[in-house]
Image (cartoon, rainbow, N blue to C red; front, side, top):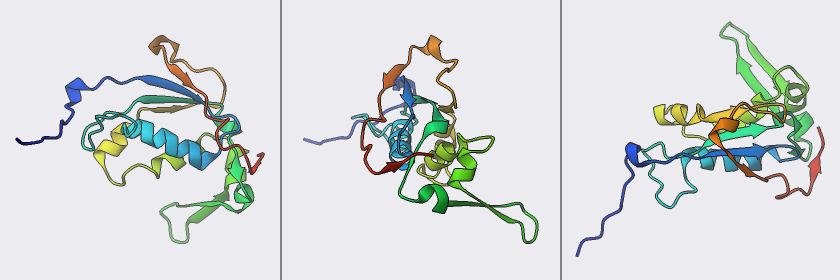
Length: 157
């Protein structure tokens, strides 16, 4: 008697829509939860090479929190492509800036597999908004309360 592992096919996947309120949520813990949902690792029939994750809508992304002194000590680096073009900003500067949702987007992006077409496809299923409103009500998303989990040792932005 042979035992085989059932593998999902892309046509068999049923994707759900979930809404997460990021107000007072810790960035790293929230990003881990979102990355697992995008990849589909919460499902019992998870298949690594198939896009079986959910669509994730995050609201109030500008109200996320960091633990410890990360708000002032965590530095994001990037390079402009020109000689000597290394730029940097702290997490607090980005959250106070024009696009505060990028903190959460980058955290989730860096938790997905690197240099993978599948990871790029899964990242397109993430929608991040700074306000409490979102235009995805027609998809009947399920709301998940996340901020109450692990709320100790959090400093406000």
